[in-house]
Length: 235
Picture (tube, rainbow, N blue to C red):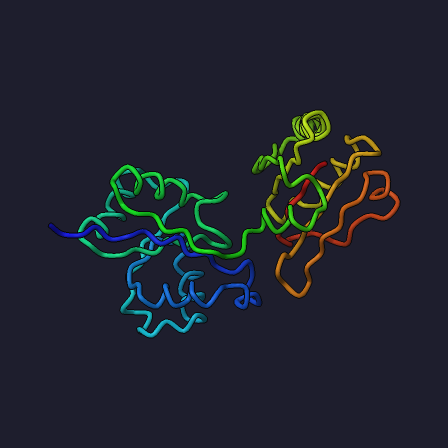
């Protein structure tokens, strides 16, 4: 009876200058693979090359996934594992399956009896929580908030209530080009004593992690966050 291949969840750096954050054992695992499910082939090739994969890039097989990929395509992506071939799954940045469309692939792998092997690497969500000083015993990741100003204000107030009433740190993200709008809305709608952490460019030389009360942020606003990957936390 043919043995089923494994699905390896391969973390990638959070930025081009952060390849040092990938453990050696992850690279050694990567070197053994020649078939990858990736969010963006160009980014994946760049990482694989930087990780010094022993085989030429044209010899490696890649298929791209996104939030628009249909389940039938996911099944075809995993078909090689059912024939005994190991597969690598990579996100655009950070850990696959966490705030990432790869979670659907992982779920399908479980349903098909394919062993899933998560590997250690950088997660911007956990790094931000670690550096925030907020409650790490109870926390919730909320993903993206509303792009509408009125809804955004209401959402922020609701998260503030959850953070303070349940003592549950609330974590959320935004598209880098909307960071300034998020900060402006937070300073407008949140109570002065609410703690807000802004974590930017994690693991990069320009890393910035600061937790202050809203009243303090108003007196000392953050540096320009435009187009810089950021994580926000309320506590």
